[in-house]
Image (cartoon, rainbow, N blue to C red; front, side, top):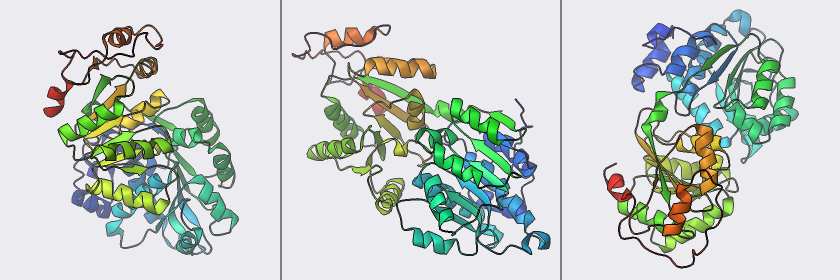
Length: 430
């Protein structure tokens, strides 16, 4: 594995003055570890495989050198034959929200480039006609989801034969969401000679096979960002059927400025929102069945603080950057251990301390033990005062070596006056 010499300032990374000026305005004081290692290699034109935790600053790691390289290429020799719907830099992402977010970040970084770099985002869920109009004359940087990109290519709205830099962002997520065929089709339309940058939080076999096929003599960078340590993880045992009551109690008691609640199904979003509403808590929902316009409005309102509680499926677990999000709650446990890490990574970003809560009943216990084992963590099981778990269930949950089955005699609840842990005391002080 190759590593670069760590730089302590963006100036040492040889970025041009317009980009440095913008970074100063955005209060980027020094490069994150992933930025310090990735930027020099991208500027040098190397293929690259990079892995880092969410919230590590990887968008700037590839966007800043891309902007600088494309700007440098815009000389007479390069531009004299640039007719048609060309693309110079192509960034493939798994979700609509991430496409918009990455494009917005790139446009922000390019503020002082005087409009020299054109950036367009294309994704499904909205009219293709508007995107086709935006692509007239081509674009320097295209941020796209694979399906919509193929639609636009088939309509001759864009051509990929001049791509000089390809970025695969959240590669593991693209493959896990079933984009393998679309990704293969896109890659077949790209030129052989190009720079390829692959970013992935995890590296399952599919991603490893992709890197071997696609990249040429790549630099490999693996980092575990310090940001991960800023997330405080807590696990609360609850009785079956009491998750909603416990959740409502926590929200009311602590009045979090923002709370992102994860469930596993689209209809679960709606059901939980209705249950919370009956308990006097207004919550919005965020899932794949909602139109793109709605999702954009809801996400913007949540980021700005207009919405306090957002209930979402795992569509919100990857790539979304919500500044200073104080708490993430796993109402339903994620299906995979890696998704657990991506969920809790929505909080505690960019050095901010965040809180990740998981509510588990006896049916969740074994699965959470698997999540702990795979992620090499071990968390103390706690209880919320006033919602203590029945004695026999508590004992079963403490036996971490046995798969959970429904304990006998759970019909009658016994409230213990003294909780194992008074979780509210800690939460009030957090």
